[in-house]
Amino acid sequence: MLLLAVVCGLVILVAGSLQLLRVIGDTDTPVDDLAVGDSARAGDLDVTVLDTDETDGLLRVNLRLEGVDDPAGLDGFRLIVSGELLAPLTAEQAGEGACTSLTVAAQTCDLVFGTAEATGDVRVLLVRRGEDQHRWNLREG
Image (cartoon, rainbow, N blue to C red; front, side, top):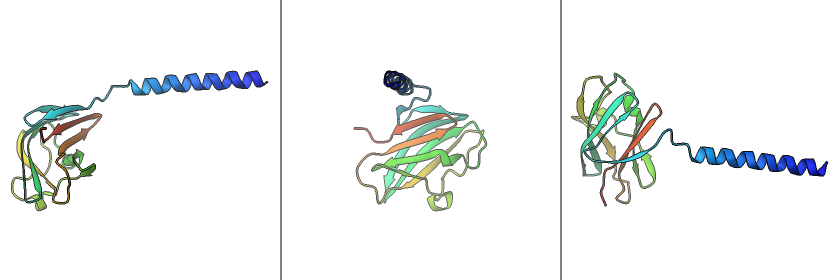
């Protein structure tokens, strides 16, 4: 009986190890490191980061977006700063030129993030849509 318990324990250990290796090796949703000027397709959305400007505690990320009509599509964008995820300001808070929703037609607009409280120089734009995820390093070096 004791021998059977040891064998069962070993089988469970081997099965768990194999599952762990399988999960670690899973690359179905790779995350790439892009730079300003690069484009990526996230689900049904094409995104190009054209430029950035950080002034007076606001980071403006100028984007070209196209491919899908989605009034809530901007919810998939976040800015990584100081280990935190920041949501973009609303169009009313961000002002003129701010992105309001996603459209099939190509549009150029700004996502604006409040960075006044952020420490450090790291600025990474993250977009998640469907099973795709992409990130742009907005600061080189």
